[in-house]
Length: 239
Ligand code: SAH
Image 1 (tube, rainbow, N blue to C red):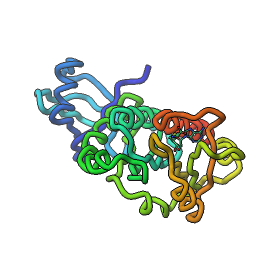
Image 2: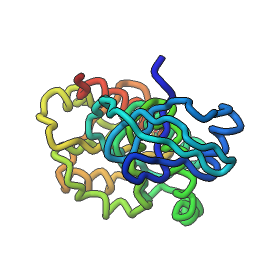
Image 3: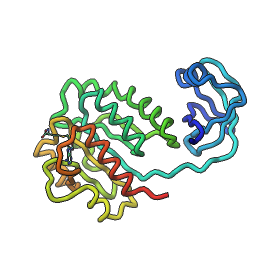
Image 4: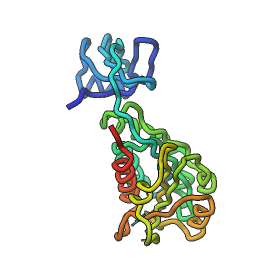
């Protein structure tokens, strides 16, 4: 079992702090004490941190040795917005599996109310990702981008871009990943509950995305997202 890890809210030289609810959790739930050690992710590095002061809304650390952090493959998930409870579950699980960035997109079949509400809701998604990153001992949370229209996501810069489509019958995601060099990172797109519309799949294709399948069963959107990240992380991962 590795040491518990926190992503610092404030860093200055060899000192770091957790503040607000983050500190409160450490103080009240974990009963943190002065002198206790944790791993602290500073944004630049992962370091050993020793608690120097404890208050309800602020815990301070002295930072010591740098600990080597496990590298993660560069995986961007373009995720059509769907029902928030399930979407948030997908964000948490994909973070555990190592996704580096999540770009929520408003697709043709994204419910209009959800699309409108997503602009604010993203504030909830970032703490979910941060907590999952800490829990899974990542050095940093994935970036959660502000929601954008699908048309604005089609030109992402990743070297390999794959749209997951349940209508795809020839090509498996695993085979696409094994066949292509992926030094420039990859982007994976997963549709909403109703799937991608036919013209959206054409737009992906015109923009150079490869269409791929996750297998013979039709998965719910959140399952598809988690499965796609698991396949990509296991294919691209190296120690
Ligand atoms: N409404 C559709 C299913 C949509 S599933 C139906 O019931 O027929 C939601 C999203 O999950 C899809 O847009 C796709 O991106 C992904 N997905 C689900 N199953 C998949 C599979 N077997 N292969 C690839 N993608 C899949």
